[in-house]
Length: 373
Image 1: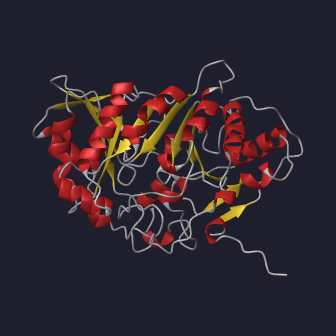
Image 2: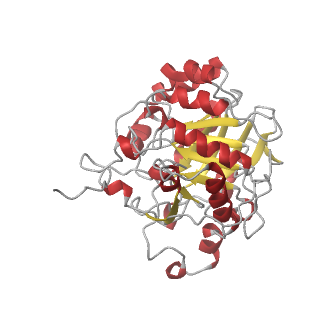
Image 3: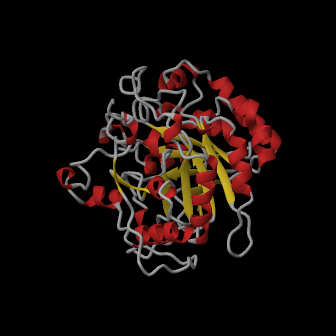
């Protein structure tokens, strides 16, 4: 008899079997963690695979042809994802974002979206269902995603110069096809569309103004994201981070801007409006201006591990409960206990502690491609 082979990807990151409280109480939608942060946003990774090899997320030298991705049997089924989504909504989640990897690589994703679109909040409101994509498959899928109940998309695009973009995605994918995907999403009404640009000093910071010029007057909200130290494989260095304040200064030199209020509590982007009415831009400053104090997001990995921070090194294995004959009340109790114990604030600590004192240095931080952005 041969030993059972455990797929490497299933044991790559540490995880706890969640504790189920003995005094189960029905969710009230008012769950709060140790820092009084509510649970409002659930990000669900539907695949750990991607067809790009961006250096800041899935560098080719790590995620090469021999990399062990999750087998299909390890992934949560659409039924399991929907079951967990209902439990999280009962606890207060109002927004679900589908991520990856590249989520459009997950077969029949429209079926999952249809299932999630049927869920309502306790007050009878529909969920805000969104998706983050590199847009490589968006042109052909936009209509079916909209028909299934998807409301909005966020597209990752790190520059308009074709040579720069091809070099950053490292699979020779052209900018023109991403722009076609954005146009298709606009055409079918997956709006307002957001475009996220990760700014890496010395690599694509020259693309800041061309991106702004292109998306002004388009209805697309362009957001610039500071290059982050997510995971352990992207070779992150602080000197490659362009602080958001410098991005705004560069934009202001050509386009006068005025600051505007957040759309909702816990929004990650700092918003700015063009003075001439051409739309808005945003900056996400998780390195230089941490926003941990208002973070209301939980992240569910492809095979059902719950992570409480983008920079976490350990998760909570909800799949073990889903496949272990536990009922919804027990799983809801476990989720409530996990969130009420949450104290994560990595970005704030990064700014206040010496590098050798940061939490999680003795463990392998989870990769962005595994947990979603």
